[in-house]
Image (cartoon, rainbow, N blue to C red):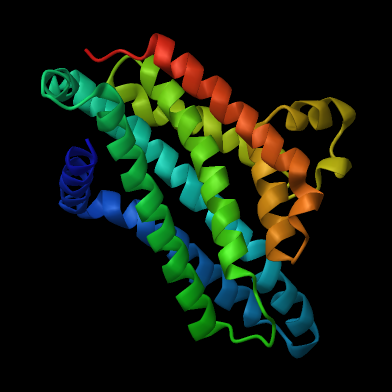
Length: 249
């Protein structure tokens, strides 16, 4: 089973890389946003250099990482929908590979691309924004993988019920991008009106942002047990629902 998993994962990676626009959207755009916005902020007058440095060290990496997770989800939704509509999932299911192996291969591809994008983002940060701080890159990578697992489970649920490939990405974007406004990434959740605060507390992206920001700033993992628990619940619930409603054809 493991051999089949790795072979299928490698095949999916090669298929993904054959589409330059898709690869650039998933890998290139988050890194590009990190570099461009960081240079714009860092190009301000000297008195603003401290604020720019704080933004580069804290806000921008989290913003880019959230883009990584969302790109992975939207890409997954689109690919699964295209495979279903083209009959590819049906043919794969007829092979000796187990259904779990087929779906796990897609998850591995997204996780590998997420890790690659994070590495490129860190390298870009070191190249363009040298700062005398010790960033917990390993801990942040673990936090990003936890968040991506949770977000990918949402993507699988969307892919399980979306009708056609034509509507896959728009529906996914309509669900995911509005979360950005309430996640605390741009405006602190505590500053939102009470009704919006309540809505934010039930959105998984809120806990993703909280976890990533905290770990990047050096918080202890114990301070984010609630975030990890919330993301774990989302993963379990969405995975269970996907297993019941997923359509192979």
